[in-house]
Length: 240
Image (cartoon, rainbow, N blue to C red; front, side, top):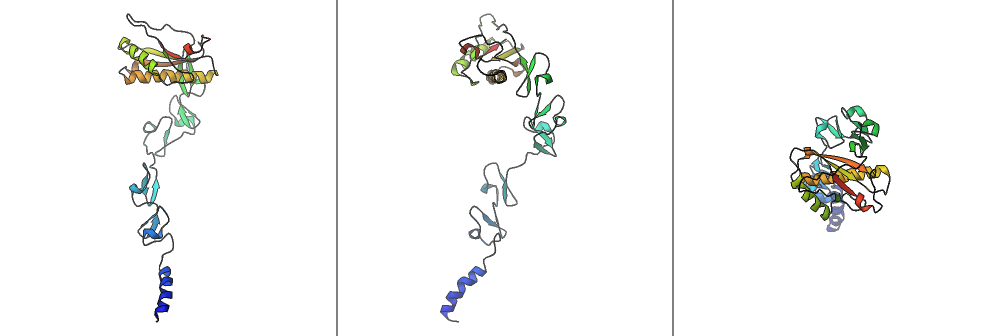
C-alpha cells in the first residue's frame, strides 16, 4: 500500500476506533466538566470533583439526603417520613399540640389555637401584653428600655449598651418577661411579629452574655400599647 493511501486511511481508522458517547477511553472523549471512569463519561469520579456539600454517587454529584429516625432529628418545622426529613402534609404528622401550616409544623394557625392572653404570631403561640406593665427597677438599677430603629429588630450599639447594664441587675432564678413593642405605623399582624422579633433579639443577646434562657420569656405587644405620636419611643423592648 502506498504512502498516499496510508495518509488517507489512518484518520478514518482512528475515527472508527473512537467509542460512541458516553463510552470513552479518556477524558478527552467526554464533554466539558466530565471525566472518563471505567470506560464511561460521568460527572465525577470522587467527592473532590463536586461542589461543597455534595457527594459523588455512581458518577453523579448529589446533595446528601437528610436521613432520620424521628422528627426530632430534623430541622425546625420538618417531619421524618420514610426516614427522610421533609415538609409536613397533615396535622397528624406534627405531633401533639402542633399543626401543619404551609408545609411546616407550627404551634398554631390562628389565635383560636392558643390559650388565654396568647396570640398566634408566626406559627407560635406567644404571650400578649395588651397594656403597659411595670418596668422592674431593682435597688440601684433603672432598667431602661432597649430601643430599635424603624422597621428593624437589629440591636444597635446603644441598645447593646442598655442590655449590658441590665445583666448585673437580673436576679438568678427569677423569671423576666421581655415585651417587644412597635409604633403605630403598619398593620396589626406585622407589628406583632416585629415586636416578637425584637424581644427574641434581646433574649438572644442576654443568653449569649450569661443569662439563663429558662429565666426569660418573650412576649409581644405589637402596636397595642403604642402611645407616642413621635413613634420612636414605641420601638422598644421592656423587661418586666
